[in-house]
Image 1 (cartoon, rainbow, N blue to C red):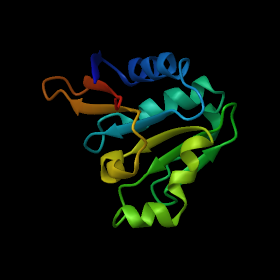
Image 2 (image 1 turned 90 degrees about the horizontal axis):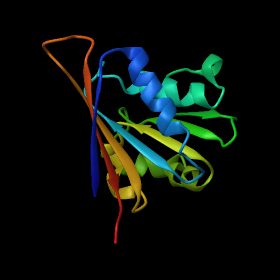
Image 3 (image 1 turned 45 degrees about the vertical axis):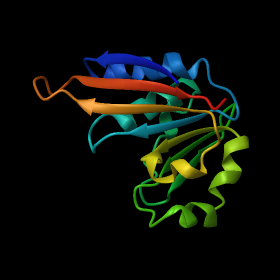
Length: 144
């Protein structure tokens, strides 16, 4: 597992970091976003979507579970926070999205058993000394 740390001092810095990551993404890539509410997961996703020209299309999938963006490549933004269990993810055909585009999964630790062997996990944490600072820990999970 490869680990990298990034300290963001603003929402805009978080989005810029996400855009840099987005420039390396391809169909089949999965990004799992973990962290408490308000820690920057949605702002990060906005940065990725802006990179793919979807800035005006952004909406939270909180109540729909997945938002599909017809970018090139397609981007699928999941929020699995409200799922009861992994079976509910399977029932919506969640695994079928993994090969169709780039998947961004907020609260993805809830379905970690269903994920392919390789994915990027980004854990967001607040800095309680500075409300604008977010610490991101990026892990590239690779099974051997």
